[in-house]
Length: 153
Image 1 (cartoon, rainbow, N blue to C red):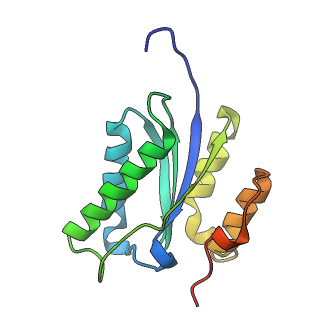
Image 2 (image 1 turned 90 degrees about the vertical axis):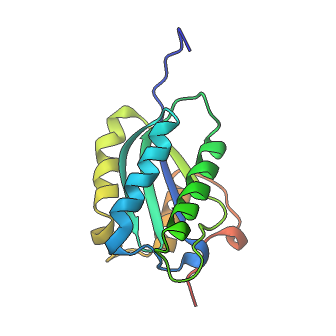
Image 3 (image 1 turned 60 degrees about the vertical axis):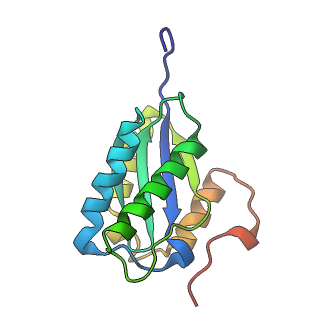
């Protein structure tokens, strides 16, 4: 796209189906590399990726040549297929339906990267559900409690 200039940074969060802790330390880095290849293959630039066994955070520079929902659908479908075809998870692996995406200005990027890189330390104090609600409230997003990720019982 000539004469089109953008600077869009997206923080994407999505969870494993039923918030099961299926992402294992032994293969999470391979998963992250696979997801990076999908996103960058679509022309976007991954700035940070990390997560926990039940969810993932990705910060990337987004090019507006594709709908965000189409990119997320591709990432989730292809990464699920990759996990299942490589038999990395006990049983069938799926991502939970839905996702959260938040935009940040360039001046906030280093803080978001630090936040994503320190997921393990952060979740020693805050649960994923609490974290998710904090993001929704911080960005003033109205939500229906029926459709929020619930703690596993």
